[in-house]
Amino acid sequence: MCRLLAYAGPPVFLDRLLVEPRASLICQSLAAREAKTVVNGDGCGVGWYGERAEPGVYRAILPAWTDANLVSLCRQIRSPLFVAHVRSATYGEVSTSNCHPFTEGRHLFLHNGQIGGYARLRRHVDALIPDALYPKRRGTSDSEAIFLAALGRGLETDPVAAIAATLAEIETAAAMTGEAAPVRFAAIHADGDALWAYRWASDGPPPSLYWRNEGPGIVIASEPCDDAGSWVAVPQDTVLMVRRDGTMRSQPFRPGRLDRAAA
Image (cartoon, rainbow, N blue to C red):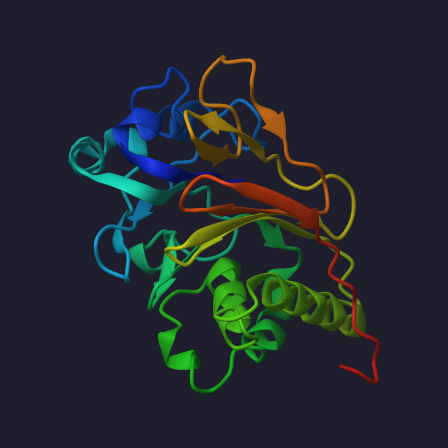
């Protein structure tokens, strides 16, 4: 499983959360404490919003703990909303096109989890991506497919409904093909004004996800990046929405499998 982090609030330098903490995301790339895979060395990436609507993005196949360029960028970039990811590949080779975050226009997306049995479901999942968006498909991962399919289901106007519809259709495809492996989904989507953090699985506990206050802002992470006692586990079947000013609200998130007629 991968590790991810997101922040929204007053502008801070990225290294404050990604480099400096004792158990920072960069440290987690080598020694994660709450992941099935301790080492997350199959690439890394950051995405941040500044003065323009579209985000800046850096992605590389180097492990984060050896990427001097990543550290240098984190020490120079100050942002009110940013995301970061270190990858442990489940599907898709180690390549820049499979590194997170994925981006289209003003949107960023990063994911920890997997579509169970994706090798057998890939054609069905790829078919969920609208023809107009399919040329945006650069990599081979299940995460990018979820993002593009959600863009085609209204991510621009109703992000939660778009993600829910996408996961419901994936569950339906799995059921219709007899695939029993679960879908596990901890993910972040951002559009420059807000970010949405999801924690859900089609069976059992989803991948870990936590949040805490960072001054007047909010930080969300796969696991705590320091020993502060203020980290709160995001409940299962929940989505958090955090605005750029650091205000947060939560709501239930339970994608429902479509029936065969609807599918």
